[in-house]
Length: 320
Image (tube, rainbow, N blue to C red; front, top):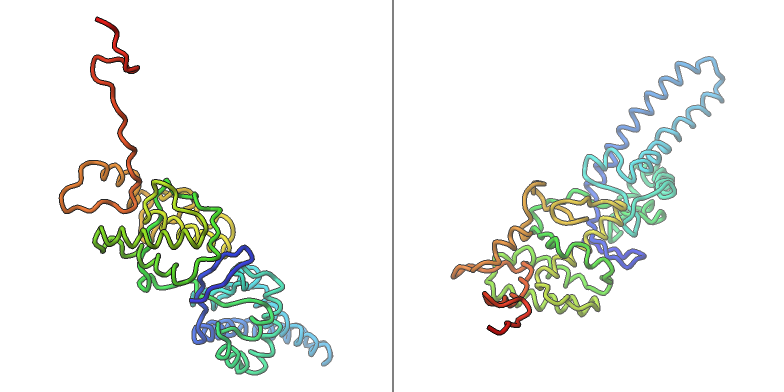
């Protein structure tokens, strides 16, 4: 896992691509580019046979630059860092701040790639990737880019539930830049395993993590908010910022888990949230012995005093 800090002090959790997957992606891109170059060369030879040698050489150089250099640059620019090989292996080129690349980034990567990939058969690129901490070749260093993995196996990390709908979008102005990686990891591990813990142990852990997170962010836990729900809402806010930074505004669409919230993997659009209104309504009643309450349920409002029968709502009884 590699943490990148954006200009807005948003920490991004990105997985840099490994050298084998990058090499296979480059090999696939080069194979497609070479096939296209051969076809273009055959067409040029057939149509320019009447020209002199100097014109044919100039056309060959132009075809080489346009197909083997300009083609990958155009593809990465239009696809925002997803070439055919990277798309096949689940990779993507992003900026150092996690945002999508633009033409100048693709131009620098493509221009330097001619030297470190085409002219040296990839030897310089492999050495630079092995030396770099995040596996970047020289083109990535000069362009300020990074190749990351987009498809991450789900089984490696536990499912982190989304926040309750009544907390969605409540922490949009929270400063998360001072929260360390260890605390984020502890919060995610707790949220993915809180249903497996003893209720008292789970509540104590949630309270300690919520206090630590509130101390790091400088904002206390809102009154009446369960600690587990506060943790889920803050984690969701960080993931929303990561997605908006990497994929642009509107990466998350409104759904059954709240405005701007993302649905968990495998969830159906019509399925209720794990602690939505229906879960809260079920848990507001009497709790059976041995049954744990939902740690993220919104606390019920205190009961109001009802006036006794035969007495007006004002509490004043007229004389008989």
